[in-house]
Structure formats: C-alpha cells, structure tokens
Image 1: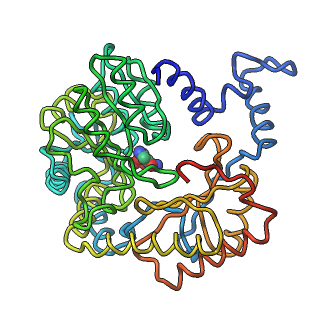
Image 2: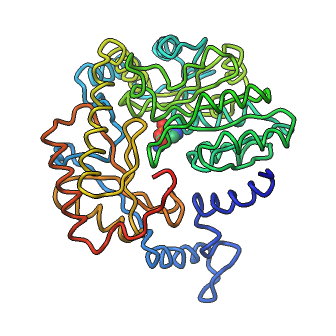
Length: 422
Ligand code: PMP
C-alpha cells in the first residue's frame, strides 16, 4: 500500500474517531443567533444530543453495591488493604501532594523505589514515572521523534498516542489495525528514521497486537517500536508485572504503561533502555513541566506491584474470568471480541443502542462500559466489559445473565455487527 494514501484514508477515520469538531459548529463558525463568545457550544450540545452522543458524569458512591464490569481495576488491587495502607502511610509521611515537578521537589524516595522495581519487574534497564499514563505517552512520542522521523501509528491507537503524534514535529502515517504488512510498506516508502506506535492490548476491543511481527518489521527497517502496555501490565504475564513484550532487553523497544489499571493506583511510566530514559528525563515536557505523581499514588503502585509479583495467581484468575465471560456471552448468541487480556467489546448497532443497553444493565445493578464516538469511530459503538480477578463465578454469571436479558429486551441492539477486530 502506498503510505500517503494509507495516511489520508486512515486519517479520515481517525478524525472521525477522535474529534467531533469537524462535524459540529466551532468558534470559527459563529451561529447566526448571537455573536457572544461561547454561544456556539449550545449548538454543539444540541447536535451531540441529537446524535445520541451526550455523556453523563456518573458519581460513584463509596458504598455502591453494583457489579462493576466497567472499571480498569483488573486485579481488584485498588481496594486491597495493603495497597490502601501504603497510600495512607505515604500521605501521612510525605503530605498529600508531591509539591513540585519531578526535577525540583516532586521526587521522593518512593518515586525512585517504584522506578527501580518497575524496571526490574519488566526486565528493562530503567523506568521513569509520570503523573499519568497519558503524560507518559505524550512524553515518549514527542521526545523520541524529530522533524525527520516518520511516526507509524496503528489505526486503533489510544487518544494519548494520537495526541503525542499531534504534538510531535513529525509526519504521521496511520496504518490499518494490527497490520505488520502496512507498517512494513510505510517504513519502506520512507526510508529514514521512524518510530512505530502500537498497544500490546487495544483498549476498546481488547485484542492483542502482533508484537513479534511488528518488532521484526521494525528491526528490518531500523525503526524504533513504542508499545503502550496499559492493558497488558499485570495481566498478560503469568509472572505478574512483565509487559506483554519480551523484547524489552532488545534496546530498540520502549514501553509505556499506566499505574491506574492492574496496579489500582494512578500515574504512568515509560520503560526502556537507560539512555532513552535519561533522554526523557532531560527533555520530555510532561516530565519537566508537570507536578510529580502524588506520593500516595507512588506508594500504592509500589505496594500493588509487589503483590502482583508475589502472588501471580491474580494474573491467571483475571484471564480465566475473561475467558469465562467470553464463552458465556458467545454461547448466548452475542457477538463479542476475543479477549487478548481482560477487555471484551460487544458491538452495538448505534451510539443510542449502546447507551440504552448500558443504561438497562445499570438499572439492574450491572455497570458496563459504553463506548461511543469520539472514543470509537461512528460505526463502532459498543459495550466494553472488563474482567476482574476478584469477580466470583456467581457474580460473573449474574453479569452475563443481565447483559443477555437486556439484549433480548432491546430491539436488535446488535443489528449492525462490524467485522474485523470484533
Ligand atoms: N493508554 C491506553 C491504552 C489507555 O487505555 C489509557 C487509559 N485509558 C492511557 C494510555 C492513559 O492512562 P492514564 O489513565 O493513566 O492517563
């Protein structure tokens, strides 16, 4: 495939996927009704409502008894007593905030300890902790590319990688999802410095990237590979915390991850060769200009990481839960994505169908994720379920019964089923 046409085609899909602005009024097209600034947001809101894309900020109560299949607390560690205690102790010892950017006052002994243990667990030379996985991705993409670099990005890459591409001063080619062949073609046509961006487990459908093939393609072209392991860390490897790729020692792979999913805390990390991590320390804007991660979050992530390493059963359990969930939904006749780790997508026929289906589940005490544009392309609205290691079989069966029963009640919630990764 010819990279520029790939880029144009996929860019259109991506614009649809990540931004509503082109479809709706914007500050550059003021409405006729008024010239006051910000009036245009009312028009956007009206159009968003008409398209079934309005979102609600749901307030979670501390004593909420709903069955949760929407959070990213894959190993159930965010509420683990040891993790909570570590967070509380750190807040008492160090204060509520980190007090400054990492290069000024925002690095405590906890941050350092966490970086050393993350690097060790993931089998790489070094790690650098950020205030979020989003910030880690922005850092890795922008600091490791320059004006001559070609960035090759999978069509399903997360918004934080996409925003990294937008901030980078490089040309970005967006290629077909999960296609080493498309990556190969893009790299061959460029012939210069390049970096390929992928996720180990994609966040919406939960499918895995062909990492070994991608790595081989990158090697053949001398390109770097950046793998976002947000949904793989702590879930993919039986030993616990190793990222999906066993390629870390190779020196040409950099991984990022969030501390907010399997590790039940908050924050992000970039993992890789020491010289790369040192380069990020010196140049990454989201490291230099952002306040460091709160000590309580660093301590919680560290405690969770130690639990993950000491008790690998959690990792096995979450995978078994995902498989059971997948098996039961499939036998009930629903089309669902095959889980690469803990995430399962259930396509819905429209944004409205997805929202109504999720709402019906919620009314019966089961909370599921509902993904609509701009999180997914127009035609790919879906429910998103996450397996958790602490879900009992009985809870799982109740969740499945609810999802299936509400599907039956609804008028063809899966009328239009996209193929491909689902
Ligand atoms: N990458 C992926 C694939 C994600 O799913 C997320 C979180 N949704 C992030 C990065 C960002 O991580 P954080 O929430 O820690 O900012």
